[in-house]
Amino acid sequence: MRINRAWLGLVVLMLPTLLVAMDMTALLLALPRLSASLGATNIEQLWISDSYGFMVAGLVITMGALGDRIGRRRLLMIGGAAFAVLSVVAAFSVSPLMLIVVRALLGVAGATLAPSTLALITNMFRDERQRGQAIAIWATCQFTGGAIGPVLAGFLLEHFWWGSVFLAAVPAMALLLLAGPALLPEFRGVQAGRLDLASVGLSLAALLLLVYGIKQLTVESVPVGPAVALVAGAATGLLFVRRQLRLETPLLDLRLFRNRPFTAVLIGLVFAGIAMAGTSLLVTQYLQSVLGFSRVASAVLFAPMGLAVAVGTMAAPALARRMKQTTVIVGGLAVSALGGLLLVSVDGARTLPLVMIGIALLALGTGPLFALGTGLVVGSVAPERAGSAASMSETGNYLGSSLGFALLGVLAAVVYRDRMHGRSDSLAGAVAASRHLPAGQGAELLHTAREAFTASLHVTGVVAALIFAGLAVLILTMRPATPTIPAALPDHGLADHGLADHGLADHGLADHGLADHEPADHGLPDRGLADHRLPDYEATRS
Image (cartoon, rainbow, N blue to C red; front, side, top):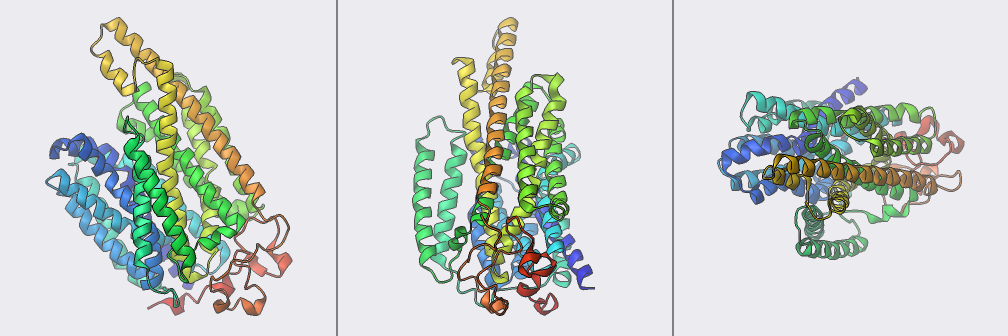
């Protein structure tokens, strides 16, 4: 009965996970129509699109720590209710400024959802195998939501007005609010300490400045403003780090980075995000601007990327039961590298199947990293700190995506401009210029521009392949060098959970690490420490 309730609770947790991911991508198709309806300028369109993501990225660390303190279910319910109400307000916005503000507030609500759902999973599933499956399903929802967001938006825009894209969230959030109290346990850290407001301000300022600077690098011709934002963000981040190292109960426990597998996974999440986001940017533009597909058709053709990640994350726990976790993750990264290399052979409409196979393989191989790696991150701390650990995973994903759009976007632009020899700064500019030229000259310009953009896609594929290959080497080299339980992680409250009596007080990552050994060799039955670390599911209910 307990397991049934846990799995039903997971179904409830899938709803906000899907919606946060969908809300990040669904607006892309609705933006032109709502901009025309509201009379939004180019700058206003940019802020309508980005204000949500900025606030999610800036507040996810704070919300993860806040859930540890006030209760994860309570924070999830508050965030879900706010998300539903704000979605209705967004759907009926009457001005660009109103929509920008509401989108930012939606980002605040969205930041409460991801770390709360992931942290609750660690409390609901005591069995390590079931917990791994649940985390894989959670990760699958994230990427599936991102893949189907544009497709759903395209369907809604065909039949309804642009506000329907926002209203799609309301029924799901209503179900969360109705079923959540009955199916989800409450959990909070007994000794979590007070929320340090100075740390909250520093983390928010640092992440907002960094994400803003990264994003603006791709849209501003003069990089002075973005460079200032990046420097200011880095300086603020340094102050945040120094403060965390001095606090007894920090907002973000940076001492976790002393563990090599933990650090390797977080680095992997960031760089995999870079490769995925950069490739996504180039492939979607290639489908539309080079091959000439509509936005909706491009979204459908691009869907295999999100669906392949879903398959990879779902398959990862089963593979990990048959082979070492390191082997599963490294093998997946090798598949991703192959997918990146396939993009180098793309050339025109006849190679469309190669594009789809390439992005599918690239995405499929990241599944084990996202599923098993996320399990490592949230399993590396005592249960009362799971929200904070979950926020670290989410922050890595957001930063990786932002870096991918900026860095690989800039690299692609450099390759394109070099091939065009100053005739055009962008493919969109070449398309616009061709309309004002004689037919022959316009066609020749378009042909050259499309070849230049294809070359930039080839370079992006090579860079993505190199990133995944480098991550595979990193995972192999940063795993524990000897077949022992990973080194000590201080001050995670493990003694309070009875590990000292079992001689495991200094080994918080035993069942989640990337060590090439079987836990049974260390007297740890059932491949995990779940029974030693997680409180009774029934005892946490309120």
